[in-house]
Amino acid sequence: MTQPNVPAQRALFVHAHPDDESLNNGATMAKYVTEGRGVTLVTCTAGEMGEVLVPELEHLAADREDRLGEHRKGEIEAAMKVLGVTDHRWLGGFGTYRDSGMQWHEDGYAIPADTTHDNAFWNTDLLKAASDLVEIIREVRPQVVVTYNDFGGYGHPDHIQAHRVTHYAVALAAVPSFRHDLGEAWQVSKVYWCAMSESRMRAAMRAMRAAGDTESFRGMDPEGPMPWFTPDADLSAMVDGSAFAEQKMDAMRAYPTQIKPDDGIFKAADHSGTGLSQEFYRLAAGTLGPLNADGLEDDLFAGL
Image 1 (tube, rainbow, N blue to C red):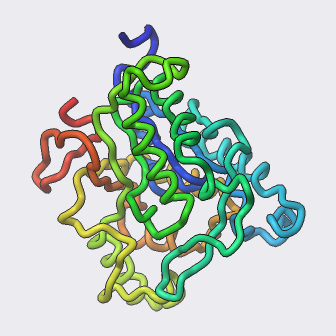
Image 2: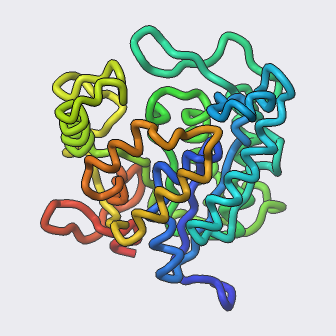
């Protein structure tokens, strides 16, 4: 039974590092908060291994003072204030799982770094991390859970691990006899994977190239393969957060160590016409609800 003063509809978003949530789901989160729906964000690591884009903060980097995680903690707090999200959790508690780092494969996608810390998220025991998330799922009791696809979007090991942990936790949370100490069993109704529309990104990149921008998304050809993005035929839902476009952009700007003001993603937003606030999803578990004229759900709670 739902407790008093708890929103009837609740969504749980699971992300690997601070800033991932704003880029992927910022408009959806802001929209749902405004509509009075429950929004919980779980961040798996503090992004300790991220590149520092602000010169005067380079001393925080992992290979120097190694204090970037604490700084990004402040950045995500600022971003959540922009989006109106008040329920933010660190998986296992802040600092339990460390950013694993990554390197680029010659074919253009992320792969694990050659060396990682002992408590890197990529190295963690899957059952331990999943159990930490089970406890949150059973407390929040979300109908909808959102995370990455099996490739983590672009191959980042922490994104892939977040995908694995989320799916394992959703399964375990529904088992009545699993870990009574973690709360009463809860069956999540729908699981979605974050997605970016291939056709939308191709159109935005064509406009950028036509405007003379050859640096943003360097190496990507809008007429060639775009494996990071989802073919439109595989999309399940599109949440129209157009009214929250500026909130999404402002939340992304709350991460100056990670996202430059002239970053390609902001230029793509300018050329998309929607500020990337129309956010797409793939249904990974559960049943599709009613579809709109475009053959997509327009709400992650559709049918519930």
